[in-house]
Image (tube, rainbow over all chains, first blue to last red; front, top):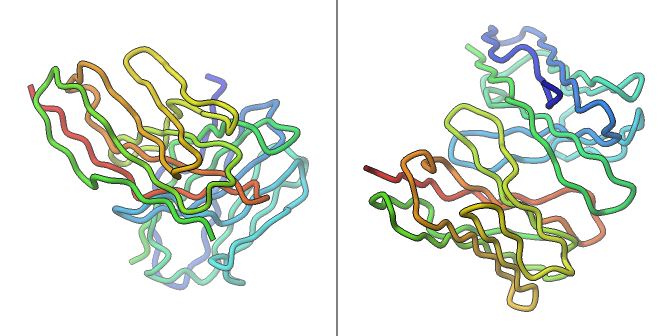
Length: 115
Length: 112
């Protein structure tokens, strides 16, 4: 399977703990996006990378959140000092495009529950 | 700021019906619009991508149209089946941004 993969699929953590999620995009895709989705809502943009460069971050991404894509391949999203409000589905998507056009392909998501 | 609205929020129909799902957006200067399907607790599956220069795209029983001037897109599902039950989301990319704006989705149930 050459689709977008995310690990872990589920994560339960206690408030105050740090968590890290991984996303492996489709191999030839140069853009990678992170979104957060809560029940009944569409995905909300968090951040995106073009190759290894983080080009845009949402205001939703507080200083407790950090994302990296060190070699322009896989990406990690870390949440420090988790809060109950961080409970959500975290989605990763990738695309290959040289301009605005480009179809996004999503991974299965990581569901985070903060207790 | 782009805002995307999907109507209806939920829809329940008997198998075999033809359906129309609506997506409206406030800023007509878009680059493309993408329709997705999401099954409960899962990620999004891309259905159709319409570029701003296109009027419609078709894939099997699905047809998506785009009218930029009125800020609307419709997803037409022909001969609905129980396996079509899912949430359908539209995402609009435009305004000089690489970041798409999503609607909240239409939750579809097709009962046998």
